[in-house]
Length: 139
Image 1 (cartoon, helix red, strand yellow):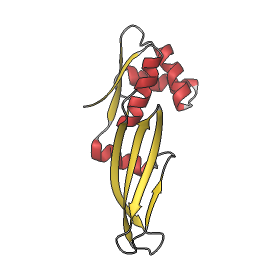
Image 2 (tube, one colour; image 1 turned 135 degrees about the vertical axis):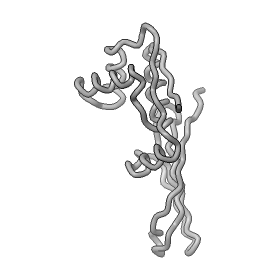
Image 3 (cartoon, one colour; image 1 turned 135 degrees about the horizontal axis):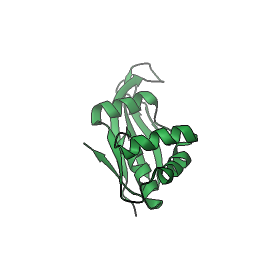
């Protein structure tokens, strides 16, 4: 069984019940081969609490994770790390066209492609499954 990869951030939003500032904890996780975004929140004023599971990480929270934890990079190596093989995986996983896949593959080969640790580990696992030596690292 593959290890779960997690990154979390805390932030404040207005409570939907009373309007007070409510503390929220957001977690992006790679679980069972899928990326997910979960949020738990609680209001110290009215006692309201909520949990929302699944979905994609909001851009603002993704940026916050990158700022707080730093970016992870995707690295590939070995003879199987050809542009064509990498592009095939990227197109399937990122849902991008050929021109975009070529540009992203170039970044991957050069060790420049970055994102959150769960995102990069997700792609590294897909690349390894395709026979490409890949790793997600934080520098």
